[in-house]
Length: 285
Image (cartoon, rainbow, N blue to C red):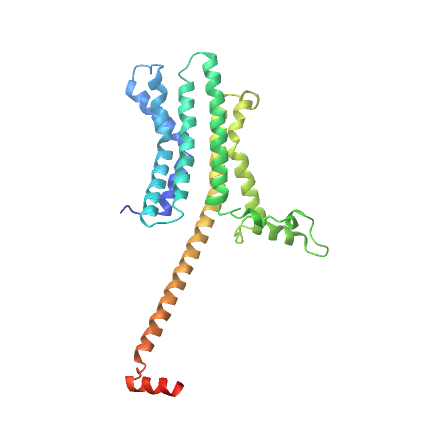
């Protein structure tokens, strides 16, 4: 039976996904070293090797999801499908890498434009899927949209404290326990949403950034900031889940102890004899 993937391995694998560009640079460096001191030929191999290196973190994380799905299948866990959906999420990060690598190998403008259109569609799918997974699964928020009632959207009641209603509604919509507070959690959620779509800056690269290198550096800094904020709520939600699971296990253990004690006490009670049982039955008649 495969071993369950501990949270620390999942945490570091997710962090590696934010370093995909670093893996790409390592692949490029390795490719340059293979051709040293000759120049690197401009062909398909020039971009394929760095792209494969950039996909390594996503492949590692997808494999962890498949391992957990296999374990859930063996244990007949009804929620094992979530691991498969998570693996699909990481696979959506691989397709933009493949299309981007192909785009650098074509010469005709029409082919480049088609690849660019496909790349945008893949970016939208990946960003939307990942954002929904961040909020619902990784942070445990908005798991029950029915909690967002019209009262939460309305004005606070007369005489009620200003921040009380907003905090209550935020906890109802997000989740009951918010250790960083409602305002900080909402701010992190908004920042994560904006930074998930930071790739839209590619359309304004020449207007905003003085050079492509500055654009690449800025995009990596944005991803580092997003990952740092993501880590706060991810660790918070994992701590809440582990404490909840520990409390559930303790309650089950206490119930089993009580059942065993009751069974032990019953074993010491005297058992009525057969004659006594007949007398009790006869007297009841």
